[in-house]
Amino acid sequence: MSVLLTNISELVTVRAPIAGRNPGERMRQLGIVRDAAMLVEEHIVWIGTRSQAERTFAHAPIERYDCGGRAVLPGFVDSHTHMVFAGSRADEYAERIRGVSYQEIAARGGGIMATVRATRSASEDELYERARSLVFSALRHGTTTLEIKSGYGLSVESELRILRVIRRLAETVPVRIVATFLGAHAIPPEYAERRNDYIELLCSELIPQVAREGLATFCDVFADVGYFTTDEAERILTAGADWGLIPKLHADEFADVGAARLAIAVGAASADHLLNISPETIPELARWRTVATLLPGTAYTLRLPMPPARALIDAGATVALATDCNPGSCYCENMQTVLSLAVQLCGMTIEEALTAATLHGAAALLREHEIGSLQIGKYADFIVLDSPSYADLAYHFGTNRVAEVWIGGRRVVTNSAADSF
Image 1 (spheres, one colour):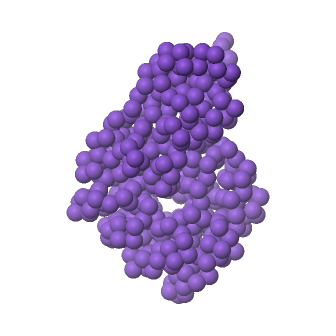
Image 2 (cartoon, rainbow, N blue to C red; image 1 turned 90 degrees about the horizontal axis):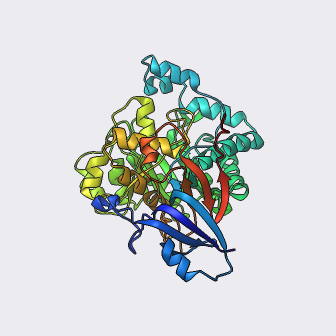
Image 3 (cartoon, one colour; image 1 turned 90 degrees about the vertical axis):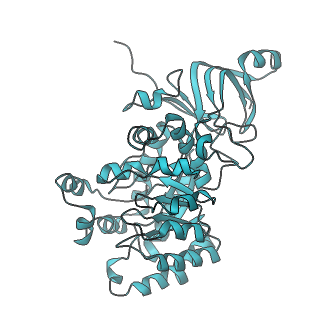
């Protein structure tokens, strides 16, 4: 069915050239069409002004929808999340507020391992229902595509169960979901003295099984101090690539271990976190297509320095933003919050943050030619704000500024305003 949306105050297209990206200063160019109209089916068919639409479609037998003078933007693409898990780490959060570090908590068996224990004990249905709630919350806040990683199982049985939950979500919720295998999230306790055996398990058993079942698109590794070395990460990512899984990296979050450089070397789709990327690596990252995915919510929660967004953008890197939604270091599924943090604390303009949260999030998933901007031929995935200006996403922070969410040309969410008193 065709729908003609009219009376759009600002149609923020974030349009991109044939390369599908807008790095550097082009991140500020949102391609806004004012007093706009857009014809959609599953994909976007036509874009223009309202007056052009009135002339072009005056007698066309199509449904018309009045956007009420509100702004329309691409749906958010959240390219880094860990939404399938069990248990809570609210107690750890309280400890960190009192001054205990993330590393100290992890060293005594908390952190990732606390979630691993809870997740291993949970049933598939329990994991599905909790993750489904988070996915729908993200959807209500404007996310139309999101990536979900495994990584809280760290055993053959549990990792496969998490990935099957992700597949089940992809089949049953309207959000576009991309799966990533993160068996290399940490070394599980039963392999603490045999880490090479666990890496061999990943490379020889888990990765082949994930690939055979078609359970993931990407293979990710947490390469950092206390987790996996760059040599180990390269071995795991190479094994994944041999089975058709595209590399990604948790890179240089706590220290510069050279993970960003490894991401470039292995042709990773993205290098994520980058709080401690070396200044010398930033120009190198800008010369290649590996996306720099920044996760300011995690730095905020852990009270760490923010990622060097300004340096990366000024160097010409493709910079994306994502939530890193997880139970330990960033329990937030709201991309609007991430936009606010990026603008207030990372030195990004609102326009740069929007590009990073849409088009470049799609690039981090290698889907920039399908989603992430409003262009003819791309999926009609967009959000209608409750205001006439995209700036309200950052200006009126702490509230949900999304009134409607459309995916594939179909309205899937209406956030009703509160009744008047």
